[in-house]
Structure formats: structure tokens, C-alpha cells
Image 1 (cartoon, one colour):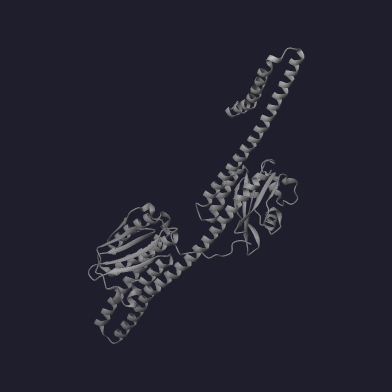
Image 2: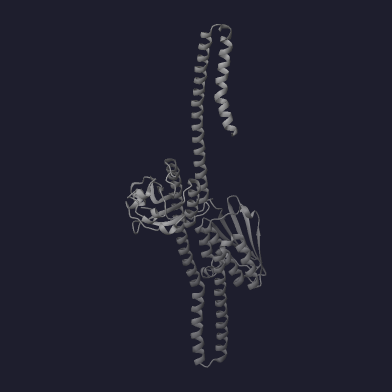
Length: 460
């Protein structure tokens, strides 16, 4: 017998025995006749039985409370587990799949599905499934159609323990697969329906009203996660669009101007050739050759930079370390990365993207304009910001005297725009003969990142 069971029975019998002994001692010296003894035994039996029943009643209440506390703890643990899982990522498909895994784990169900509301078609579209017999579950539902449609229409949970005998359930193959129990809840965010979650069990007694309460709480968590992931996807799409626009501007400022200059010099060379000015033609062709080489190098560096953007999955510091190593080999300029408290430097994905592009542009200026032997990228923490400095030992210049056309050639406007787009700032320090430093100040993740997402609609 388990220890807690022994303690429970001791708690029942010890009070009864103690009361019986107490009354026996009190009445012992008064017992002389057989009738008195019989009365005494009957009284003891009644008292002992009463104490026993009272103790059982008390312990039943205690046991019920224990079960309730245990169930509540399990629900809180499940809510915490699902919350932890869905907060690990903002990838919608990953969030839904991992959430379903946890839901099936805590409920003991065999299969689960999540539908999301699609405003364009006004349908519930299946987006995630986990568990047994996935081939029998695929379907789309209109409002008030099938269990998912009814849940979406009414906003109320449904629990059923006899799927084969319930005409409201439309998917015949699911019934044929042997499922008997179903529990479904709406997924909400800010009071708005964004989808429906349903779980299925082979055992007709598996899913209870308590499971529905738990699922409803989990549904609210998952609904918020769906909206967050959707907004994040919209933000990424906007960021990608802005990035394409910036790359187009960079190409216009660099390659388009180079091609325009090449076109002008080619026309000039033709005119000189017609005038039979061979020496001047030769000089112009040499200018064209140098310009073509510079344009080719710019394109090669741009492609190299874009490949580095794709490898950001490595993480910011490994990506920069790899990039600086390759850049040094390609350009013959020593470049290194200096960073302290690497674990404390956490930037949003958008800030990392813009920072890498700023560093690439700054190093492109080192290659094209600085005539430097050494470049350094240094990270320093400043409260809830990080200061990133790209410095070289090149020839330098007077920033205040830089004409607007040269400013665009150096990409300073786009670099500053990149920093400001993620709540940061950028400035340039340089003196002739003393090198150049580009200083980028960015907020750490969660510390004032101004790059918010569009609050678009998610559900219907």
C-alpha cells in the first residue's frame, strides 16, 4: 500500500479508536450489569461508526481538492509548455506544428489539426496536422459547415464522444479510421476568430469537459501566436521590399552611373577615331577599360555581399567573421572583428540585416576610396544600445566638404537610411591622412526598435 494511502487510513481509524478508548475509560467503573455492557458496546459502535464516516467524508473532500489542485497544476504546466513552444519562433508553420505536438501530449489524443481563417475565400483552410492517419483529415470548411465551421460560426467549443453516430461530423474517412472522440475550440486573438483547433481520440472516454477548458486556454495562446507570426511575416515582406528598393537605388547610384559614363566615353572614342586622333583614342580606351574593371568589381562585390546575406542563418558574429575573412583575401586589406560580451549583443533580425549591409557598404568604400592597409569592425555596448565602428587607416577626407554627388557615391545616405529604419543612427568621422570611421548606433533587441509591423487583419 502506498505511503499516502496508509496515512489516509490511519487518519480515519486513529480518531475512531481514540474516541472509543476515551469513552471506555470514562464508563468502565460504572459497568456492573450485562445490560449496561450491551448499551456501552452499542454506543461505542455508533460513536466509532460516526467518527469513521465523518473522517471518510473529510478525507474525500481533501482528496477532491487534491485532485483539483493537481489538475490545475497540470493545466498550468500545459499552458506554460505550449507558451514556451510557440514563443520559440515566429515561423507560423513551426509554431502551429509544435503547439499541436504539445496539445496531443497533454491531452492524450491521437490526432490534431489547426485551420486558419482565410478572408479571401472565406474558408477555414488546414494549416497544420499532427498524429495518426493524416490522409483522412484534409478538408476545407465554410462557416457553419461541419464541426470546424460550426465552431468558427458560434465561437463556442464542441466535444463529442460518438463521432460515428453524429451526423454533424462530415468526414466519413475519419470515422472509418476508428476515431470516436472529438474536441474543438476556436482560436482567438484580441476577441477575433483567427482559426479552429480540433483534436481526435480513438477512446470514446478520452476527452472531457476539463480537456475543453484546457483547450480553450491553449486556443487563446495559439491565437495570439498566430497573429504575431502573421504580423512578423508581413513585416518580413515589407522589409524585403524595402531591401529590394535600396538595392535598386544602390545599383542606380553605382552601376547605372558607370554605364552612363562608359556610354559617353565610347561615343567620344568613336568621334576621336573619325578625327584620326589615335593617341587620344588610345587614352580614352584606357579610361573605358579601367571603368569597366571597376564596374565589374562593384558587381562582383555586390554578389558577394548578397551571398553573405543569405548565410545570416549562421548568426551575426559567425557571418561577419566569415565575411571579413573572405573580404580580406579578395581585396588584400587586413580586416578583423573586435567584440566583447557577444552573448549580450542581441539585435532584431531586421537590425542584423541592415547592420550587415552597412558594414558591407563601409568596407566597399574602404576598397574603392581609402587606399587602406587595415580595417577594423568593433562592437561596444552602450547601455541598451550597441555601437558598431568600421574604421580604416586610409587617406581619409573632410566629411563636411564632401559634395552631394560624392556623398551618394560613398553610399552615406543609404547607410544612414538603413540605420534609421531600425531605430538607430549613423555618423562618419574622418580627417585627411588619419583614416575614416563609420559609427553605427543600434538598439538592442526589445530596446526601442522602431521598426514596427503593419497591423493588418488576420482573421474573419
